[in-house]
Amino acid sequence: MTLKKPFVSSGFNYETLEETLDVKPRASSLSIAIPRENAFQENRIALSPDAVGVLVSNGHRVSVEHKAGEGAHFSDEQYVNAGAQILHDKKELFQHDMIVKSAPVSDEELPLLTVGQTIISPIHLPVMKTHILEKMMEKRITALSFENLKDESGHNPIVRSMSEIAGTAVMLIAGQYLSSANCGKGMLLGGISGIPPTKVVIIGAGIVGEYAARTALAVGASVKIFDNNIYKLKRLQNNIGVRLWTSVIEPKILSKQLKTCDVAVGALSSSSGRTPVVVTEEMVSMMRPGSVIMDVSIDRGGCFETSEVTTHEHPVVNKYDVIHYGVPNIPSGFARTASEAISNVLMPLLMKIGDEGGLEKLVWHQFNIRNGIYLFKGALTNFHLSERFNLKYTDLNLLIASQR
Image (cartoon, rainbow, N blue to C red; front, side, top):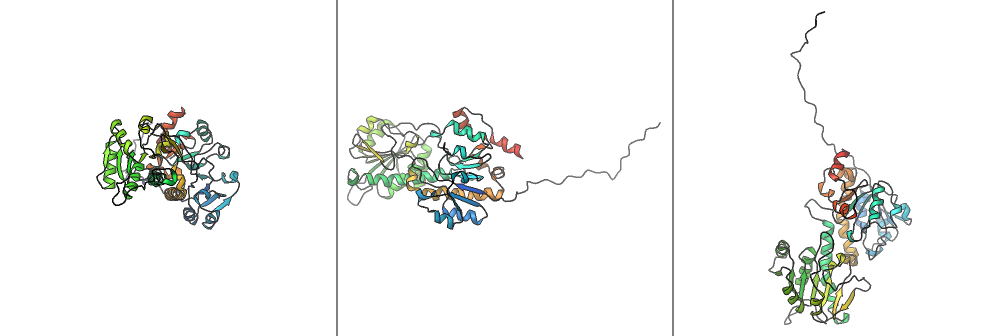
């Protein structure tokens, strides 16, 4: 038996296969629910009626709980006119695929969550509880946080907006407490012709500090800013565009300036844990009677040793004849402006999610949104949360890649 030699045709050649491109998915209609918040002093709502109108006109379904917008002075009628459905039953509301909230998930809402839901809300790390995270992981929730959400420029748009509101508001509130009607010094914040300007000390040169400085300068006050981050001091000076009195936080210099100031603003931030206390009780005791302390850092413990948490109903306490304002969540006191600011960020995001066919598809190429995701289909993808609560961490990039 003779073996035949293999025949190779001269016409044989290799051809390249067509390239398989990432095809844009079909747009999907979102089912969005906005519950009424029962959290302490939370008056904001995540979407304004105008934003709801845009979403509804683009084919999305929006349901709003009865009186959810009351704290921000948005009526049910405004939401109905925008095309939303008003629901009285919270359980029915939580049947939607996507829940958009202006406060973290509460204990009362945990049993109402359904498997595979998407939640967009703040975390409020200082008051976050382990069992809430565990229950959300168990129900395979995908969750996006306000605090960590980033835009294309790498900034945190919601945090920035809330900081701008807090910084501006804090000086307006301080002006009220300097008046005689509120047992203050009877001084006008700022100054008029022939009278020396009010002295304002701001501790912290972040966004809150910058907007507090802008507002104080606008009414004619003398402003002095302290921060240990030289870059922040330079940036603040460049942003405002005028030469400012700045210093690192050196106790002797700070104490000397606090002795003669009329308003002291605590605007230090902390990326994790408690804000450092930089103003001691002794420093406060040497301040002028009738001076005002505005501790914006009170959300994370405060940077004045004498500060304590107060409420919108009883906003101040008096220690050493110095008025202390310690209301956390200052933007909630200006709920309509704050709600519109949050809405301006979330409405375009929800539109993108709908256009891309879901959040899972959007994060495939929108890397900045990945920063905001702390739960992805039940897997904890935020390293800081996993460290703090001793829960299993999963890398989000690997999870997303495995979905393709």
